[in-house]
Length: 458
Image (cartoon, rainbow, N blue to C red; front, side):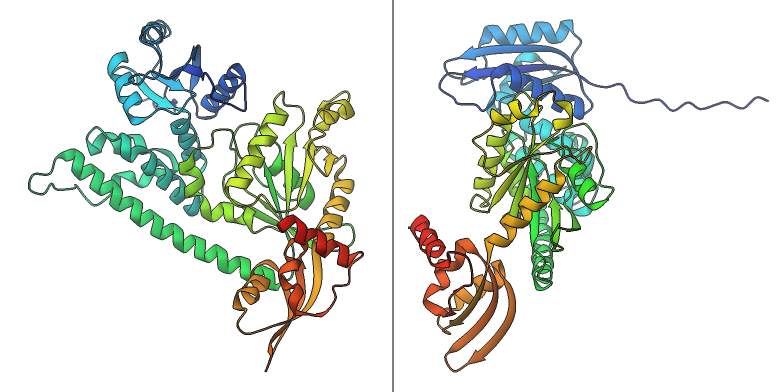
């Protein structure tokens, strides 16, 4: 009897109709068509086939359906014509907009926005326990105000790395007078609190790890940049590592740290973190707080920009805005214009972006320009740190904490006058220790530099 050969088949890919709206007087980093193109890349990264686009210019969003009633009919007609399963909005939809649109379009179509799409991509790409916790928290916080159906519906939608959704508190028996919707909300709220407590443990663990790292006196350089700018490729090239690389958005989520030796022989740690994107969901920023602290605690930021991208300037500005949002806006930064191997005339392209300081043209793929980049990082990094010898009174405990937290402590001695500390401190913080100098910092133009720092702060 012949054996039956089983052939593994993949589930059919969902089809999506994309909708983008330009709202009058609402400033956006990217033009409508470019933002729509980015949304298409996001959909493809999520495993969705894009079958069509719809755009509209509005003075203000429709209070009920976001887009106008005529445009709703157009979307419905095109979704039917192209046999779409999803309607994805580039704009963030309120819970009411989403409910009304699903009601108008009918039960055959699921309506989601850019935020939900990005959350789904993160869920697919979260491969560690920490990443899964962060994504699941972001998913629940996004879905809680939008919850309108039974718990089983939400459990089916959890998907990806946030797949713990179905295991929340058993079957969720209702109390007296409690509706199923109220049960679902209570269960999700409980799950959110649990996830937050677990992530607080992760945050504490990362904090302890950073403290141990500081005791080794090895500076940290954080790689930041728009998603798909080439950060992981650069980390691989610098450290001979094997960090996963793919030509897609958000290929890697989990932070990776590698030790690299600079040209002068100084060891440093390079840390690669999640890529940024315009309209980055606030839920993700909050959920990834433990990971993003790796950036805000860095000594220097290396901003990687895809110089070949048509919207390189807008992408770079989006990253800068996000850095300010997470409290990393005052950290020294160097900009690496990546992928120059794809350009016929790199200098012309770089000249267009002359508003960014400390720029270096590089190719992470070929290694071109990396020697100059590392030398520049070394110069900025070790100009940034100044050696201090200070006597800190006991009533200035916050300065002791600041030295330990932001600096590199070499020696600590307690005496009757306070605590004497020797070590390195970031230049931008030196002015706070000036009243307690035992000896002046040994730097070129030390007096002028300290006064300049004070003037900038004031």
